[in-house]
Amino acid sequence: MRLPVLLLCAAALGGCSVDMGGFAFTSDTREGRTAPVTTTTTSSISARASTQEASLTPDGECSADLSLDPATRPLPPAIAEGITECELVKLKGTKPTDVLIGDSGKGQREVQVLYSEPGGREIYMFTDNRLSRIVKPGQG
Image (cartoon, rainbow, N blue to C red; front, side):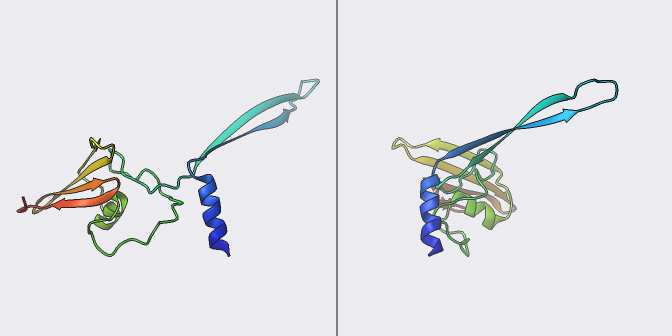
């Protein structure tokens, strides 16, 4: 019963941004003053909920630590075609050497993730946040 409610909430919040602000009033009575002085302070907080899977930034960091995507799945056991950009980074255990982000002529997000390994450079190619090709040393 809780899962459908959670999924409904996640769908309702998809792509939403929330800005919560507030005011705080404080009174200050100091010696020598005849009347208290009231000061006003404001604070603000922003929250972002997304129904899209996290993807890499040019710095090699994941764009979000939390994804409310109903398709979110456990970390795969190995690097294989179909994993996401952030799953690759988690499986490798280190930040990539370089990340190149661009668009294909078909409007798809294309990302190349480079890891400099002791045996040579490994390049992982993603299309729309899914691993589509791996180029390792010795491969063409």
